[in-house]
Length: 254
Image (cartoon, rainbow, N blue to C red; front, top):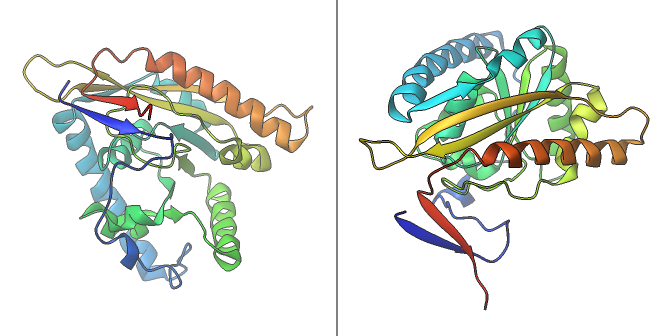
């Protein structure tokens, strides 16, 4: 254990970008119809995926387990819920965890200000959380389009990154509205940490679990809560596979 982070609530943010306030919002395009833009977007994503292969397995020392559960759903849209514990690594881990299927990630605006990777997130298909009614309209249009295209939609319901956190923070039920609305399968992607012999930072094992389906006998709010409870419980069980605490998190008592 190298350091201790103290938190007051589970919504505390430990990662800050100096450019957060300068991220453009009003002119952001959730869906690009320009053929040239889409062409280069595919190229950028391909290069991104190839780089992620070496970055995830080589630099991060990460391995994906149980990814086979996604294979039967390659020809349809699905949603993947992950714990948010890597500032940059999460987007690369997801590329490998989704097994080559192109994914689109629901993200906060501040992530577009992360050095290097933040600049290419729009071309990779970032879906920033809307902040007003007009943005919400564009966001929902983009979400529907990606579902129609049978893409993978990645969501980090914990919102803020807690680097190397080995537990699962409370997941808001509102984050599970989309599998309910689109009647799409949902999966859990749990990142866990293990000590490595020759490196200071821990190795990573990523577990994929599912599918989880909404209970159609309930109303939509109840479906969201039940789906959240099932995925939360699954991720908490998988989180027990973490055997090394690189950063300790402790709640402030005063």
